[in-house]
Image (cartoon, rainbow, N blue to C red; front, side):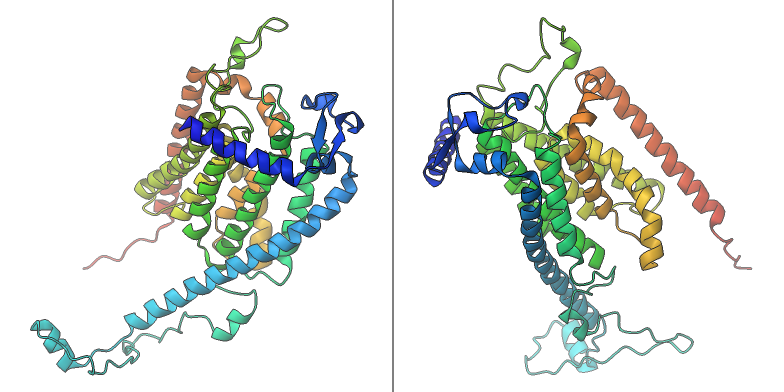
Length: 420
């Protein structure tokens, strides 16, 4: 398997050399020495020189335009998925209101074969005498002609595209100018240093499509998260150098000036297996943490605090980030929610706000601040006992919070009238 992966990567690298045949000397490149990625006297492909020699303002403007285009494609994908979900809900609603003739019902009950030319009429069910007829929940078909779709928040024209452009431009500046993911222990080759940026821009594009659908229809489709996670795992495996941090690094064993952190010996000679491991670990960590919260809330509160779409979304995020950044996404998302929940409710005046956008926003925060987050917490992530203690404390805090919410619900519930 390792040989097959190496052959596949060799073919990709050979194609890249042919595609970027024109090279420039590395000596003309600025700002490489402090990144620990350049080698003097060597030529670099045009793709790398494009990122290193183009002014950052020009790069930001260029990636803003690219983001707008990608945002439009993601928005169209979201609209198509929302239309499909709306059509499915409309079909379900129509089936629930079918009135089957009595003769057909008798034939079905007697297990006799019903002729295909028997008409089944779709008549609306009669309302109860003291019940006000409910309006048809199916949206007006005319509403499907613009971006205001679904049963959730309305997204006006251009909002998704502009937000995506700003995300692309801001992320590229944070990555290239502020080196927001530069770590001493993670030094990919030049190609994969910038390839990781493209890799994470794919994640941002998937998050935009998922969030647009979640805001419109309170649904995160598997058509986005599952293929996206597979792409993330495949990219991590084929490259072997897209990780933000290795699957295991123990900075507690560092001896300043003598020895660096402990990194398992098998990682460097088996980079492709390492890529598969860290990506799968991130997917399992993200989906597992979210599923645990969903399970506990359903048992204690009697209702699910998170949907299955949030579980698959965190699996998608973890497959691109790895398990350590995914833990930060999980912890930062509630803080982002507390900051954004009030403005969202004031603008859209909705009682329910989906949690997916907060997970996506937390992912962006982690992407542009990973270097500083890791430097402040790397001792904890290298100590199994500290991790176990932290996980136990977080679980206890979650259970206490859910029990407090359940008590609050019990106090707020009106007294049920007695049957006497």
